[in-house]
Length: 234
Image (cartoon, rainbow, N blue to C red):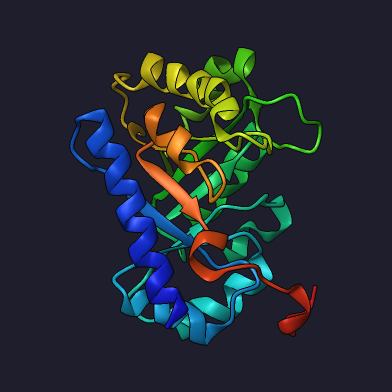
């Protein structure tokens, strides 16, 4: 099966990066399921990938109950009016990009009497289409988030711009890593940095070399995906 082959090649490639760096592999691999059907997701889980990332709330709502034994991550842009469909259902919301969204997540988690793990998404690139908290406002937002009792900040996520040579993405990853290092030792009840989520199919090697311990891989596992193959409502 091509998915098993892809995963084996990916794992070997990741291990080679760590061997070149001379450090232990501590990476958490997230399989991105955007526009991937249930059968192929199950094939990835059968290969031992139990952390799944979904970009779209609509797809998540369909896939989550169909896949047993997986930890789901919300990795796409999350609108405040869809928070209720995510909080308490996923292990990690990786794309909290504003204090307004953090407050809504906290509010919903409070109603459910739970604590929702999140990552703060930072914008390290110049692209206007990218979401995220600006580097210069991160400290203030982290301070505001620190008083919200029903969320726990587990680290930082970022998306680098698309580049032809993945080494060109390294400065953007370094910016996120520097920010992560600056705040990783903050000791507060709801701040517990553990994950630096950065790197996708086209740039995961560069991300790992810059300190990522969580990558979000779709194409390198599932191949090119066709939106028209799925029938979920927008």
